[in-house]
Length: 195
Ligand code: AMP
Image 1 (cartoon, rainbow, N blue to C red):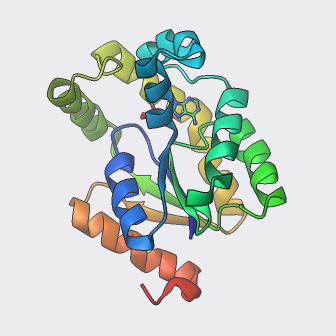
Image 2 (cartoon, helix red, strand yellow; image 1 turned 90 degrees about the vertical axis):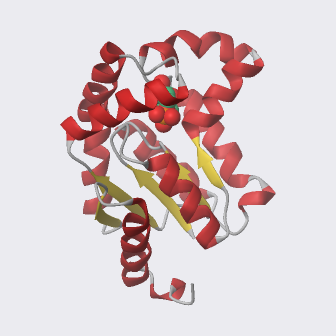
């Protein structure tokens, strides 16, 4: 199962990504987590991108494309992957798809978690309080939603046009969202119906 998870910030990508990884028995690869890890470890990349993460800006496409290529070709990803938080731009979608397909690792399905933006803003502010994520203050939250609308929402149409998109109501309870995703993925990819 090779699946990408698309959703506005705060719509539950991380939670659903982890659940799907368990269900399908593949790694959960979250670009945001990989990037934050660089910052925490103080790597050269981490030092370069720290401010961008704090400001809620996207980091460079080339950096993300390299990172994702490495992750999806690692032995742990032999059976597939759940990619969370990627692609975030049309360049990542187009170049990343070409790159992954050339390696026989192209995404087979894109799951879009649709969500109400006012509710998302509320969820993000709540998460900021609970987890103390540095990139979760009000101004940054607004910027992240704007960036999503401008850069990431066209990616949804890209997958829709390629017949790979399944859309799920991301505002339902966690279990219902997971159940809907699994059901819809089975319709698109009946060979996964044994799960
Ligand atoms: P996330 O945990 O997915 O919300 O990502 C946290 C932050 O990491 C984002 O606000 C961006 O600064 C950065 N980031 C994560 N994924 C990507 C990506 N695919 N392209 C560019 N920047 C990203």
